[in-house]
Amino acid sequence: MPSGEAVKAWYNQLYATKGLGSMRPREAYQRILDLLDLRPGDRLLDVSCGAGFLLEAAAARGVKAYGVDLSDEAVHLARGVARNAGLAVSNGEHLPFRDAAFDCLTCLGSLEHFLDMEQGLREMRRVTRAGARCAIMVPNRHFAGWWLLGRKGTAQQDVQERLLSLGEWSRLFTGHGFALLRTLPDLWHAEKVRVPVVRSLVRLAWRLIPLPLQYQFVFVLRRA
Ligand SMILES: C[S@@+](CC[C@H](N)C(=O)[O-])C[C@H]1O[C@@H](n2cnc3c(N)ncnc32)[C@H](O)[C@@H]1O
Image 1 (spheres, rainbow, N blue to C red):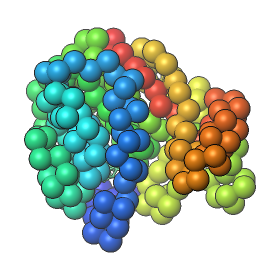
Image 2: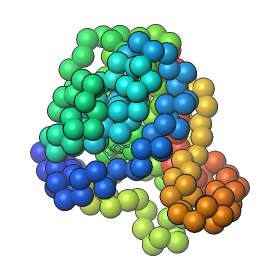
Image 3: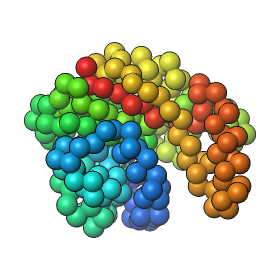
């Protein structure tokens, strides 16, 4: 297993090289916020916020948005993108917030990179109030496309990435005090096709993939 410093250095290098180009486009984050029943004035924490697109979108909905990321470069970018958000460089396994501080929480494409996922989940539970809505996006060990791609996982396998199955993720979340509300496929590979007609076709085909074989899962959870 790499050290925390090695993981941080890897992401700092990524953000320094690719900048905002490392992020999904802004509209992708709107779809995540739509799942959370947000109300103006809610306090939202985005754990591993990257360059801050979700925080920017949340603040525009009247939400008090806070973000943390292990990478100083990511937080530097996020300060430029999400000007009204509270931001800090922080390890997700040790969040710098009081207990029950948040009404909702997001963690997208990141938990699988934590050196200690269980400690990360304990911290997410600690800083959210009872009943808080959460959206956590994580990758699938059984994605049907891994064999086509000739590898299992993303480029982040080079540093730290764990893939679990739908059942394993579900048990991990419920075992840490989060009730499952919905589980949706991440349609990103379909959504990013540029030609509209082709995009619709790919989206349709992608939806036919059974959930246990999808690329990533978006878990909508309620903090029990
Ligand atoms: C694939 S990026 C996703 C960024 C953002 N959530 C998004 O959806 O665009 C993974 C992020 O996890 C962060 N990360 C990795 N390990 C972390 C940890 N232990 N604590 C906090 N952030 C971490 C990285 O710095 C990086 O910004």
